[in-house]
Length: 270
Image (cartoon, rainbow, N blue to C red):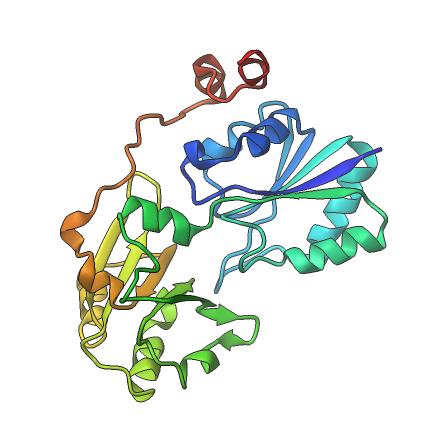
């Protein structure tokens, strides 16, 4: 019987993959991968047919219907198919539609979680997302939806004792800032924009709500980026930044194989 694995690729650093994700990728016959999956992560799929089904806002994307068609087709000719999604597949991806499709087609599948960008950012920046007396809750939002910019949850939100994480929010930054201020939040509230989380080019731009747009424009901030808003940024300032040590960077599949990192054989004999 064929089986589809919906796998979280994490934020980009291959060392943040789960062991289970690595083993499935190494055994895969076909991999349908998203736009933001890093080459180093994709490099674990050494024997698979690789099919790009990228989705990115405000540019050409593979339709969800075509992805469904490809999942059904590859599952009809291969034994192990991986649907590889950036971050964690349960957070701001269209996993719900793919689960319904696979169930309706009676195609066996399994979901393997991944590290979401917010968790990787927290570790890299040494920044707690919750902290006693400062932040008691976390709110995850997306900066846009299929209908455009999605600001409704921000119109009445209070940032008091809360950390707000906004995925894919850089293009909507001016609207996000104005909406938060209109909701009664102090203009001095700290906000950070983090680019290329867990990758060698990772960078944090931090300011307050009134000056973050100018900073991002001056520093030419680019996507993919994560927005973090809340007083935890004030308590754990930028001086505490300690990015991941990118000690392993795979340039080719042969170099990855030679390193033996997380290889199925090595794991078996460990």
